Image 1 (cartoon, helix red, strand yellow):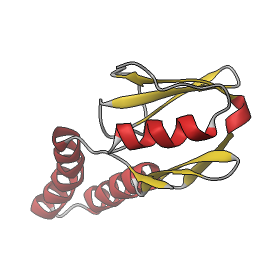
Image 2 (tube, rainbow, N blue to C red):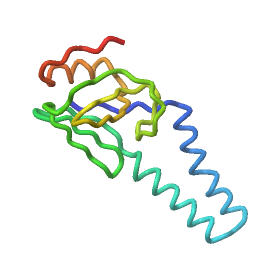
Image 3 (cartoon, rainbow, N blue to C red):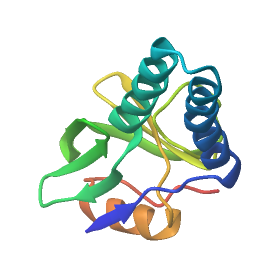
Length: 132
């Protein structure tokens, strides 16, 4: 099952601001470096953030964030819990889910956490629904 990523309105607004300001600055000053900077900013944001989704398959959780795709086998997942950790992450929301696997931690932000937890609990051996 594929789960959409959640985007907080203010993070979305900051992202748009980060795209518009360099471009507007380049247009008003007519500088080639300004155009290059605004294009680079757009490529970086798009490359790391879009598209985002989380998919549960028969044997693994697949996490897509921009150009990166992670495949986490269910057998390596040791914990899944709600989080509002502000650590750096590709998740565009602070209403996050922390996934521990193979000694690593990853923050994601599914739009419907309840459906995501229910789907994951059905697939991860020995897991139970986290308490919020």
